[in-house]
Length: 487
Image (cartoon, rainbow, N blue to C red; front, side, top):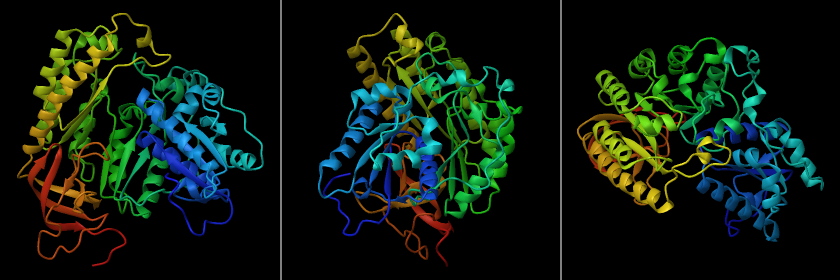
């Protein structure tokens, strides 16, 4: 939001800019807020410099995300002192605001309001109050797990789906996240998310399907199903296999070409779910498996299940069904009590698994988690050294996995142009949004008769090379043109 960016004629009326940090779940929240604000008469603008109010949807997952969120609030607040900017108020919402509330307000007086999730339905009124000099009360954090009964079967029935989708798209990407559920019932020792996101609550299938159809009508080619734990979908609705029946229905939504599921718990993966993801036309064979580690001893301290043997067996089943399936994961290195033997087991697992993408995170204490009170903490420099060591291994393994795909035929959803060279680029089926690498076309049109590639096109191509996890491809034919393009 540099102050050098100006508009010659800002929109009249109340204007608001939504600045989103963090994961795809936050992106959905921002678009739902945008829908509510637009319905209340607010004009949405792209840049906070043109907005009466800047709403920063923060992330509170790890320390770096917290810092980025605070820096973004401060950057927006600086605009108020800039005579050329329109900004009059800055509001912090999202996970950091929900998690710390009034404590964040005291530490960050530059924010005019710090509002939690329960304020979202009335956000338009809160913003109006700010513009009239009335500061809303800051959010008072509480453990949201206590808001619903512990047993999913005892929770209230899901409300009837809304008559219309309450969402406004904030970009023109040919893919969009679609929230499957919210909250989490797991009690991983390192994770604070259940405390501020609450218990696991599935969205009714008809609501998910209605929003998918709405997104398709907005030109979306791929929906990316997001939640804290997609394998639990339906357990609170009385059907733990509900995802298996929902996925084919989503794939049949007119206008959608791809359905992708994120965040699957390895210990909860069912053979039927593997089969549906692998074999349903329109559902991409993509498995985002949250391993976190592979040493059984470390996983038990993390309050998780499984281990190297079980994880490799699951991967073998997936690849036996679909050899080209994409499999990604995240791992935490340096968890309290992690030994050299534990780390060596993780390295051996990663070597045998040959995953497409692995995010490597160093352990750090998170407020309110069980792990923060565990003994056996490793020194910061030890954790950093282990992260570097595993990262080096992962870079080699994932680069080799990408090279192994040379010669494969892939379908690429074109998303735009490479920032450095201007080449068309997009994602193959095994590549998830934002963090899993891309496929690019250095020769542009490549095959005679294809014509210029545009976002939303689906192109069949042959993989001819790789750079790290990114693929280089030669286009062969256009399977689909973007929804707004004829011919």
